[in-house]
Image (cartoon, rainbow, N blue to C red; front, side, top):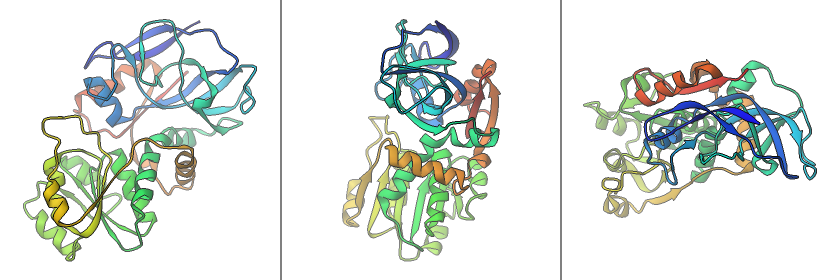
Length: 328
């Protein structure tokens, strides 16, 4: 069986292609895609060829909701017609699996899927919960910091991940400050917190000192620019915490100033990925509108417009956060 898929044949190129699916095993399920979405940070880095483990040609993406059309003999937790989240693929061609969410049909192990519903959710729910996995990275990060009410947190990056972390910190009664370089993102961040600033503001030091005269409790990095991290470390409270959650691919320039961290006796924490608890906790946050995904969706396309969505991601000429694709 052949199926439509979006692949990266080489760095900075993408195209719609076809792949031949393998035969199902007893542990596999066959899933038809309803909706997929771009994870902007991960898929941009894969497209550039910098993400850890990237090989070309590859099929990227991990945001995907589909309907189960067939199950293997050993599959007991799903039935035909179930709505599931995830992606696992087996195909015959020499195309590397960087998860491969932007595919019409998939055949893969049932253990790589999360159950969503026994019937298709409405359009609004599908558009919001398709971003659950990336949003769950913020859930994991905020939990790792164990923040308390009224504590102050600087979040570097007003992208999708940073905005999710901002909303979760507000839910935890913390006080978030968003920092970004892009004026459009700084402006967009003000929808979620009045404290959304450009790192290039000439009076950024005064603004931060006014908000936290005694220093900030937490610094949450979603971007990975050492100069920005080093600058903001100086506003940290003694024995505060830093969460490094960005992707640090620039080996020559990604070193942060450990001396500045040491003299403040700051704790460095890291997280990567999510687990099942994070996923379902975040799914509830989205359903209850604690994380307002709909406000962060900037582009909607059909599956015959896949290349348009990835042009926006690659070129960055249009402001973008959440980019999704409806499949026929």
